[in-house]
Amino acid sequence: TRARVMAAEWGYSPTNGPDVWARLFPQAGGARQSPVDICTSIASSDSNLEMKKLTFAYESQSDLRILNTGHGWKVEAPQSGSRLEGGPLGEDIYQLEQFHCHWGETSAEGSEHTVDGRAYAGELHLVHWNTTKYQSFAEAAQHPDGLAVLGVFFDVGNESNDEIEKIVSTLSEIKFKGQFTDIPDVIDPTTFLPSGLGYWTYLGSLTTPPCNECVIWIVYKEPITVTEEQLVQFRCLSACSGEAEEFIVKNYRPPQPLGNRALRECNA
Ligand SMILES: CCCCCCc1ccc(S(N)(=O)=O)cc1
Ligand SMILES: [Zn+2]
Image: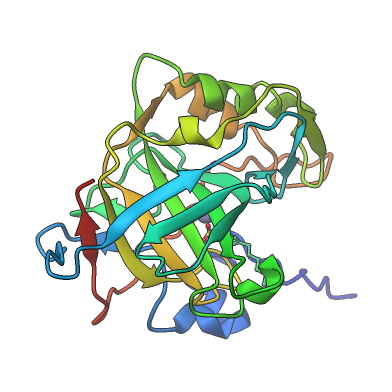
């Protein structure tokens, strides 16, 4: 019989999920992996090393492309005019490249980072790269200070998030892996950020293969609110490119060992 060689596609199922990623992607077994459980009692406020204020400036953009990656949705938002700097980012300027989300089968789980063992219903990632030192996103992803990702937790509540609704309203057009469409509405990434700007920060990695150890993580303490219906829509995306329907109901990596990494906090 002709053996069916299953494409070595990574995913989140028992046979291709986080527990086996290191077989195909060696970095996944490294010592500075993400996400991590944020143990608030060990977060140091580094008052002596008072971190410079984290500042960001984003453009509002319309017609951003959203695509179904097979692992979730991703909005490509290369913003040459955006700047993320200060805080733990030293003297370098980071530019927004894309943003995406992680979620779970129910709202009891879904975030990648956890706080004192508590998971949130989901987590938004605003992915930036170091344009001071590197010439491209792909190049930056090969260096320890190449990327900066802002993580924002989702709490489930009664008021839907208008910005997230702009994403949700396009999902029916990108049901299958590989499909993409343009978001007609104007998206202002600033609106994804919580009002309280306190955060935790540590050195980590991409939370999906290839799991490069190239990310300076900045995780906001305060969640933003989305509705259960909005999360239900996320779970209707298909991981396949057609016919077969395998919904993307879970796309988060569980916490990895913090090891001897410093976890710092800033109460903006
Ligand atoms: C060398 C190519 C690298 C593509 C990296 C794509 C990627 C970006 C962000 C994240 S996340 N979840 O850590 O924000 C995961 C993967
Ligand atoms: Zn992510």
